[in-house]
Length: 252
Image 1 (cartoon, rainbow, N blue to C red):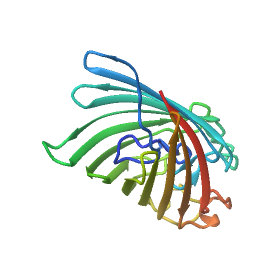
Image 2: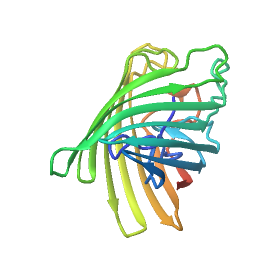
Image 3: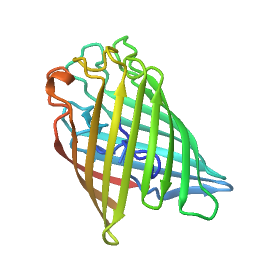
C-alpha cells in the first residue's frame, strides 16, 4: 500500500505522513539543478504516522520519507519516492521499505485555469518475505484553479487483491503567504472477497483536513486523517481510525 505525496495538484497521498506520495502528499518543489528542457527537485520528510489513503502504513509509528523528481519540457515528469513502512500484523509483508516509481504528463489546457495530468505509478516493497505486495496504478486527474478531481485504477491491487478504483476530490487554499489549507475526500472500491480487508468490506471513504505552515524553507503540517472503516475491516488494528498526523518536510 503506500501514500504518497501529491504528485500534482490533483493526485494526493501521498505526504499525509508526508501528506503523502502520498499530501502523497503536498510538496512545493524547489529546483536544485536545471538545464535545457529539464529541472530536478527533491524532498525529504519526517512524519508521525505514514497514512496512505487513510490507512497507516507504519503501524501508527513515525516514518521517514523522501524522493526526487525530474521534469522535462513540455510537461513530462519522472520520479521516485520512498518511505519506511511497518505492517506489523502480517508476517508475509514484513519489509521495512516502500519505493514508488512514477511518470506522466501534465499541462494547462490552453490559456485557461483548467489542467490535466495522466500517469503511471509502480509500488515496490523490496523487503517482503517472498510475498507479492508490489502493484501498479494508472491515474488521470483534472483541475480547475484550486480544485482537483482524480481517478486511480489498479488491475491487481496490493498483495494481489484484484481490481481497485479510487475517486478523489481535493481542494487547496492559501490562507496567508505562509499558511495553507488542504481538504480531501475520496471513495475507494476494491474487489469483493479479494482479500484486501479482513472482512467482506469492498469499499470505503477516506478524508483529511491539513494545515501547512511554511517557515525558513521548511513545511510544518498537521492533518486530521480518517476513514469510515472499523477495526474488524483492518485485521483488528487501529490503522484506519481517525487520527492527527504531524509532518515536517523540506523541498530542495
